[in-house]
Length: 175
Ligand code: XMP
Ligand code: MG
Image 1 (tube, rainbow, N blue to C red):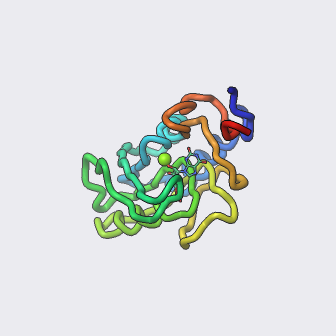
Image 2 (cartoon, rainbow, N blue to C red; image 1 turned 90 degrees about the vertical axis):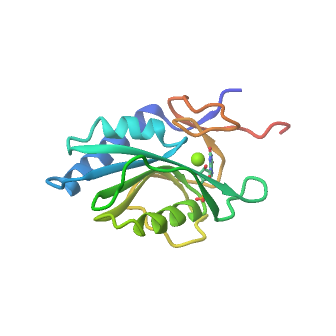
């Protein structure tokens, strides 16, 4: 079944351009800018955002997994794949697809800070409102969304729907 549209392709495109413009202003003239995308979900967002950033930058990837009962994130995060090159002295912008409880991002920021970057900022396409359980600041946020399970534009349901051009809601089966 086709996911029901929550954020259209046009709205995403417009917002990504705005975020790119904002980041470009904030990082103008800075050296060693690193866009650090969290796999797999952030790959589409990274690709669109990065291509609109005139600021010289490199891209890095990390893969994280969080363990919890069912679909809830427990805050027990493990690094499945680490960055290829050191981030020491770099201005790191973490690129995330979605912030739910905030535990995954909190863990990642704390880890990155032990590696002596020049700075760490956070950028997420969406955030689930009223779901955050831990304190974590998002410097660049695309959209606040209600507490529904979303797919598309990188986000998956059992590895499906990642390449949908919009963000949609999948109805739970059986309902
Ligand atoms: P926390 O709770 O640590 O979780 O902020 C962030 C991670 O949870 C997954 N997640 C989702 N994935 N649609 C998805 O495809 C959703 O609606 C959703 N909510 C949470 C995701 O892996 C994210 O990195
Ligand atoms: Mg994910």
